[in-house]
Amino acid sequence: MAIQIGTGSSSVGNANVDSDYNIQVVLPYTDAAGNNVGGGTAKAGAVTLFSENDNGAVTGTRSLVSPETDDDYRLRIAVDTVLDDETFNYTTQNTGKHNNQSTTMTYGYTTGGLQTNASSITTTTTGLSLSTYAMFPFFSSGVSTYIQFEGSFSAQPVANTIIDIGPFLRPTSNPYAPTDGAYFRLTSAGLMGVSNHNGTETTTSVFAFAYTNSSVYKFLIVVNNNSTEFWIDDTLHGRINTPSAQAQPFMSTSLPFSMRHVITGGAAGAVLQFTLRGYGISIGGTVLARSLGELGNGAFGSYQGLSGGTMGTIGTYTNSTNPTAAVPTNTTAAVGAAGLLNQAWETFSLAVNTDGILLSYQVPTGTVSVPGKRLKVTGVKLSAFVQTVLAGGPIVRTFALAFGHTAVSMATAEAATTKARRIVLLPELTQVITANQAVSTMISQPGGYVSSFSEPIYVNPGEFVAVIVKGIGTVGTSGTIVNHIQLVYSWE
Image 1 (tube, rainbow, N blue to C red):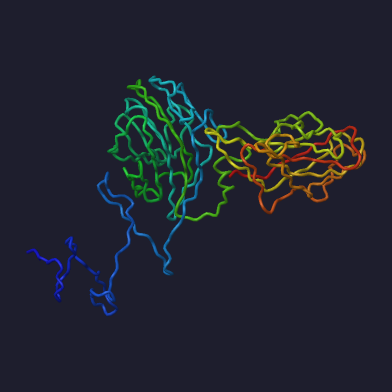
Image 2: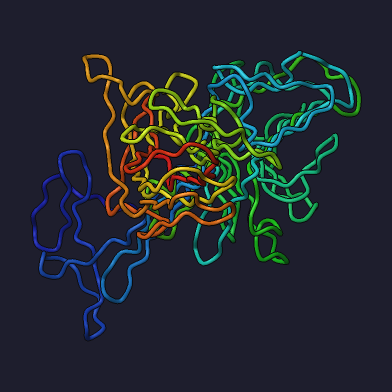
């Protein structure tokens, strides 16, 4: 039997509805005496708070999660902590961050992304794989790890082709099959999610997702102890609950970001390529105090070239080889090559009261293919010893950090399109050289060997940073000083 409620009813004991026929209610609650009551504003109940993580448009089930409040009425919150971030907009591999393996199939590094199967082959038993050298942690205790990447497929799924992308371990030989981790997988059947526990795979069904060729989509894997979720463009397409016999979705507690593309079981049905535009790794559910500099060194590398730039170390310390000694100048980096650390072999004859460059480095200029990052300098380390006996002297040598100039020369002028050097003195690094100081003796630095800054110095993209020396006293006539110099820095 239906109960009819009239619009605008205000009779005692009757419910009221608005003009759109929505019933007007005040939620009931149980009072201290155990009575179920409701009605006036003084007796208002409450609504249980839920967040809708997914409306169930694909899975058919809404995902509702309630936040947690502690006994001191504080809502449990946390912010994401970024562990790595990379955009593939450069044309050569960053050998400092990524390990590439391949069997016949080739990579294509383009400004539009990292392309698999760049040579468009369909040959069986071919493939490639990529992984980061860095491995990213997976925590328990309510912490979630987020693995996001953006990319596009050049064609619809084809026979005998597998593409896996996500955090996973893989061998270094074809077919590079994942041995542990979680990942999106594309096969001839379509796209699905996979959770791999030490070689045992659990998969979702094939997603109800049809991509458009060459369109870029955002893919997200969310991992915690309870489940692994697979999202595409902010829509949940699959969830794998952690099997009851396992403590977590995979056995490893840290994994690299990886990708593989293989043709196996026969020739590919057609040419298929995947273009990886970029990826990001972060964790949520905890609060970590990390400076922007720590984040920069973690994502971009320490004492190595940036993506899109010159790969390898950005220091001058050749393996098992000593550099040739030279006289420093104030216009060129004559002593050693450019870098943020330098083994500068210096001929002891720089004119007194003249600046000499011992270390020089130009921060990479930002372009569409090279990230424009600021260099954050927090200190300078220096020590020196006599390599061949010094003639001449005595002399006191003072040091300074020069930065901000737009050309290597200390004489660069300040103008509308150029910048002159800025100078910070480094009194802790002052050296005292005695007359005819003997070989293999340390050069005295009364103030110490490290000059630290209470506030950092920033050097912008395209600008130079240098360590320079100036002597006051009697000029040297011969001999070699070996200076070991290193900047303490991070990227921001």
